[in-house]
Length: 294
Ligand SMILES: C[C@@](CO)(OP(=O)(O)O)[C@H](O)COP(=O)(O)OP(=O)(O)OC[C@H]1O[C@@H](n2ccc(N)nc2=O)[C@H](O)[C@@H]1O
Ligand SMILES: Nc1ncnc2c1ncn2[C@@H]1O[C@H](COP(=O)(O)OP(=O)(O)O)[C@@H](O)[C@H]1O
Image (cartoon, rainbow, N blue to C red; front, side, top):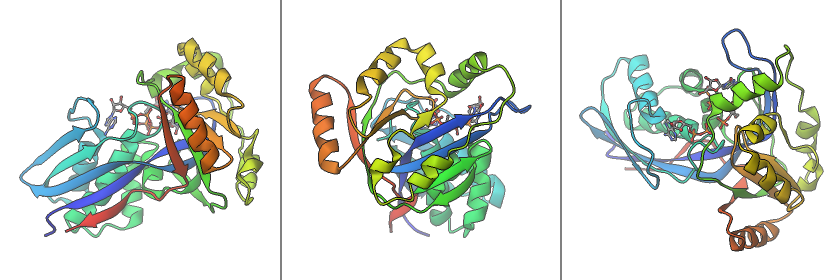
């Protein structure tokens, strides 16, 4: 058996997120364009008796509901194996930031333990387990650029053409995803389907990233701003700072797409000088993948 496996699990940004009225199961139908970013959590797994999880880089309290532990248990249940492992996550993705960090850890743990425990599960098997863990987890496996529908788990890859340079403005005060969806329902009580994102998908087929200007959109921005009026103010201040500005997922992270990596580096530096918390990242990046095993 291997003695350790290291996986990188990428954050995502929703370049477009259109939302429909809640389904009978409480989930909202979505039309979304996901982009995986090279901002990634690092997950190291090693054989052990039982399952344990350690998180570094963030003071997120570890409990049994952590998505990495849930992913490990889902693999045990699926295969009937009761192998154990220590799971160590070095968190780089902001927690509750709308960047899919927990989903990335779930996807990364599935990939890491499939390798460590030599389970040989296919991509389709992992996708099925991922969808049971959370709406964003399948995208954490696939990465790249993809159109997501249903509750986000149905994915259609989009061939990336242009390299994307992003500046992320992060906020240590996270937003709860269910809470933001609840506020969406209050603002839009009537039944409706999510709008399409065809214009953005078409623009992403161009070699120039500038083609997407004006096409980034997020229906969860208004409810997130209702909960956090200060976020609206910040968002409005950042509009025009790059090619396009968008709130990621249920927020509060704000993504600014820039025309080049040089422009993004300069903008990140300038915003940092103003006292904002920024990260520089590029996309599209690969989905959760093994970077080392021994
Ligand atoms: C909004 C999005 C956009 O990508 O991202 P985040 O802001 O969380 O990163 C996702 O849809 C979040 O996906 P994920 O975080 O995996 O959600 P889940 O665990 O499946 O669901 C958590 C809760 O969010 C709400 N939810 C989630 C997805 C969806 N299509 N409709 C929903 O209403 C439900 O209240 C659900 O109980
Ligand atoms: N491995 C994990 N990393 C981060 N959050 C996790 C993890 N497992 C469970 N969670 C829970 O999921 C919530 C949402 O976190 P996260 O996935 O980072 O944000 P978002 O859904 O906004 O993308 C957190 O507040 C935390 O309670």
